Image (cartoon, rainbow, N blue to C red; front, side):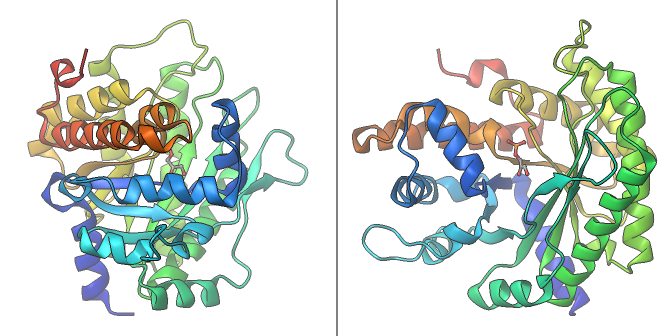
Length: 340
Ligand code: 13P
């Protein structure tokens, strides 16, 4: 492992006020999103959609890296140009989702453990050879009555840390994603407590597994009230409590924190990220960036609908959301940027 290269690559992912675009939906997840909009669920439609994304003009102005999926990293444009070559031309670093999904955790009803450690070393080596320079692993933590359990948090934190150490061994920057889900009626305060407990455990395990903190990116949830909680705090309150939780739990050696969007609307995710950067940017040890999937892609997907004639308009929508999020990193996002 070359510590300097890992550190440089981690920095590149959050430099210049850019962020990550997650386009690593597994086939079942991608198919589910297509099905909702009546788009056929085939290898070809998934390929065509990913071609739309990677060929979006100007994407590299706001996006430093994209997260691909095993099917996607091997695909090409219709004219035969590999997606990896297209990304290289756009100055975008390719990354790869390497977990194999969240499965039921035995003896823990309602809780999940993310799998994918078996054979991971060899898969990482192959992805590195192909050109990937970073990877992603997502752990999922649900809030509910009596959950999350300590054992679920610890098992997921340890898997994240083992994955991160293996990534660095293979020269890939690990994006470490412990996601506390928004589903439920829990309060903002409960999400804060759970998020802090999860992050504390994650960094204990990362240190235990000897992960180089300078050579990783943290991808957490924002601290939010549950979707069904009657009290929905303001953008500024969410910004304040999220940053406070991160300051309590994330070591200063970590170069960047790139939030997931978790099902927030594109506008709200941008507004909240913007508020954090407006209120705290000069006082933080790490960059506050984004690694959104739905909050960047959803409007484009809804315009595309599988139709070739909609590609240009969909690409404009994708470019727009990416640009809004770069503005949010600068603290320059405003609702007026949204088109009527
Ligand atoms: P969302 O931004 O849609 O939450 O997706 C981020 C991601 O990569 C989930 O693993």
